[in-house]
Image 1 (spheres, rainbow, N blue to C red):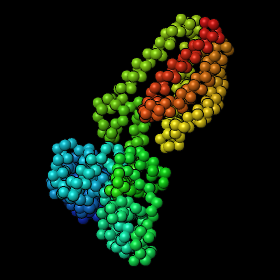
Image 2: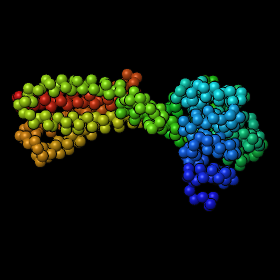
Image 3: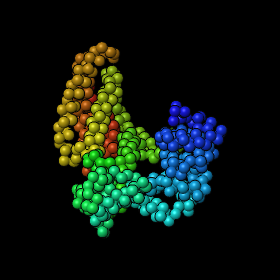
Image 4: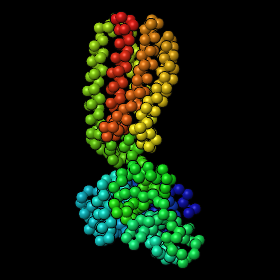
Length: 452
C-alpha cells in the first residue's frame, strides 16, 4: 500500500479511533503479519480486541500466534468461546499446544471447553509427549500420501488439504498400515505421467526421527542433512507428524540460551529477560553464587598459608590478580571451544587425547607470548621487583596458562563420563580449580627459588 509508508502503533491507534475499517483490513492483509503483530501488541487490550473482531478469521489467527505469552493470556481471558474457536481453527496444532502449555489452569480449561473434539484430541496428543521431545514440537497438519495413489489422486489431495498443512514442500508417503515408506516433492508429481503410482517416483531413502528423540538431537539432524522438514514416527515406524525448520530455529534459540546461562553458572530460565520476575532471576543465579563464594574459601586458605612469606616480599601480592586472571581466562577459552565442538558433534569422548595434544600446543604459544609481555609489563610499570622475582612471576604465568588450558579441555570430557552437562558443570568448577592451582604454583616457585 502506497498510502501508508510506515506502519506504527500510533497509526493503528488513529485508524481504530476513527473507525477506518477498510484501511485497517487492507493494512493487515498487505503487510508482513510478524511486523503487524509487533505493532498491534503495543495497543491497549480493548483496541487489540477491536482489531481481532474486524479482521478476516485466517489473518486474526495468524496474528494471535505471533503475540507474546502475556498478550495471549489477556486475549483468551477476554475472548468469547466463539472467538477462541476461531483462533484455534486458524492456528497450526503445534502452535496451539505451545501457547496452551504456558497458560494458567483456568485459561486452559476455557480453551479446551471452546475447542471442538478434533482440536482437543490434537492438543492432548501433543501435550502428552515429554517436554523437549520431538513429539512436543511436531505438527500434525501435513500432507500424507499413500504409496498406491496415482499422481493425479495425489495432486487432488494436495489441493484439498495442502492449504491447511504447515508445508507442502515435501509430502510423505505411507503404506496401508501407515508406516512411513518414502517422500515426494510436488514438482516430482507435476511433471510425470498422471497415471503413474506414487511409489514409482518417491524417494525411499529418507531421514526421520522418533517422537521421543530429544529436540536437540533433532536439530542436529536438520543441520547434518540440510533439511527443511523432517517426518516424525512412533516406535512402530508409523508417520504421526512433521517438524519444520521454523520449529528448529526456535529450538536452537532455546538450546543456545540454555547453554549460555549454564556456562554463566545460571540455572536455565524460560521466558524473556524483561518478562521474568526479579525473584525468579535471583533464584536461578543464587545456587552457583553461593557455591562459588564458599569454594573461594580454599583460595583464601592458600593465601593464608603463605601469609608469613608474603610479608617478606609484599610486592608478590600485587601480581596475584594478573596470574589468576590470565590462567582463568585461558581455561575458560579452552572450555568454551571444547563444549561448543561437543554441542555440534565435532568431537566425541574418543577425541580426548587429540584435544589435549592440540590445547597443549595452543597453551605453549599463548604462554610464551604472555611470559614475554608480562616481563615487559613488570619492567615498565610499578611495583618494581628484582629480575629473579619477575622471572618467577612470568614462569608462573606460563605454567598456569598451560594447566588452565588442559583443565578447560579435559573437564568437559569428565562431565560426559559422569553423564553431566558440560556447559552446566565445567565453567564454575574450572574457575575455582584454576585459582587454587595457579596460587599453589606461584607460591611454591617463590619458596623453592627464593628460599623464603
